[in-house]
Amino acid sequence: MTELSRRKMLISGGALGAFGALGMASPAQARSMTPWTWAPSGSVAGSGAGVDPRWVWDEEADPLVASLLDRGAVPEVNRLLWDWNRNDQPLPAGLPADLRDFMERARRLPSWADHGKLNTAAEFNKSRGLYLNLLNGVGGGMLSTAIPKEARAVYYSKGGADMEDRVAKTSILGFAVGALNAYRPDGSCMVEAVKTRLVHAAVRHLLQQSPHWSGGVPISQEDMLVTWHTLPTYAMRMMRKWKVPMTKAESTAYLHVWQVTAHMLGIRDEYIPATWEAANTQSDQVLPRNMGPTPEGVELTDILLGQLAEQTSPGSVSRPLCNAFARYLVGDEVADWDGIRREPVWDRVIAAAWPALVKFREGLIPLPLVPESAWVIDEAARRYILFYLTKGKETKIEIPTTNRPG
Image (cartoon, rainbow, N blue to C red; front, side, top):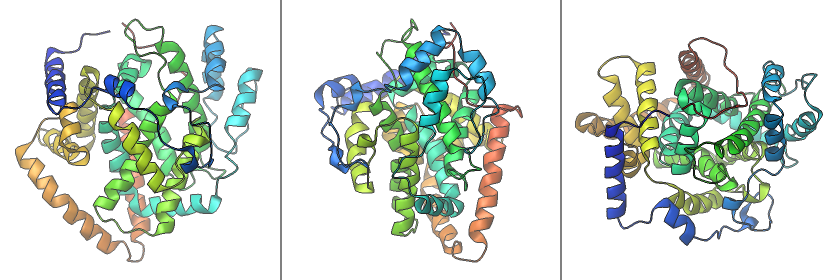
């Protein structure tokens, strides 16, 4: 592993000092102090054992993928799965029997999936794609680097050595969820979710072998819930804050597409919130006890914002603007944890201009063809981002076989 720069260590150290000055417990202390109290009656399952999700992982995928890695089968599996892209596509021939059996089960939608709600969510994404891409991409990305276990897991796993590739592969799943055909036969969300579930299982197995990892078994059910709340729960809260108009059917449908995605990623139904009220309650419990600064998070943030600045408009202005917008999206506390520089001019401009821009844009939404036009622009932006991150090369989600080198 390359040494973290002295500058990033100092930034993170300052953030840690501020964290302590606020009188808050560190994430590790919080985990030992805060019991799991969220009731499974608030889940899509409606009931459950109420086991603390910090100590639950993926009992189906984990032993399977560990076995694949131990017997050297993963490279061939990745080769066979390279062209498995559509929800309705049969699994390729030649997969190990145990893996095939698991994937056939894992690719099925839950019995409670509602295709009407999934279609409504697709229409909602059509007109709200700009906000969702910013909140899930930039906002969710900045929140994820302020989650110590997630930041360290990303940094020390294979993806941490090439963040452009890592972000591109993460974007593949995110864009699949937001696609108009996400869970339709010609979509790809089932495929990308199952592949991601296999990746998570591999990282759990591999990271425990890294000399740089000391966090126990990574990517617990709670870790996945924490990430989930930095996406739909956070996005909905911010859209409410910005007063983005939406019907109850639209907000319920947007939650539903992420409920289905959580299930497809291997989160137990007893942990998946059934309503936005339940989601907010769960988020308020799990995020505070899992967030804080790390040197790895600061370094990853610097890389991510550097990539974002390069994507938008290479030059001296773009990075300060990206810093200011990221700070606006996640707030000062998280921005300080992430080591995001304050930009005195742009911070004020963004805070004043963005609410006005949202209000202006929402005044146009009811006009004919505006949602369709917005979707065309948002889709073009997504394709550009992926093209930039992948350098034009075809990129797929693959099961890793190693940790970060060094």
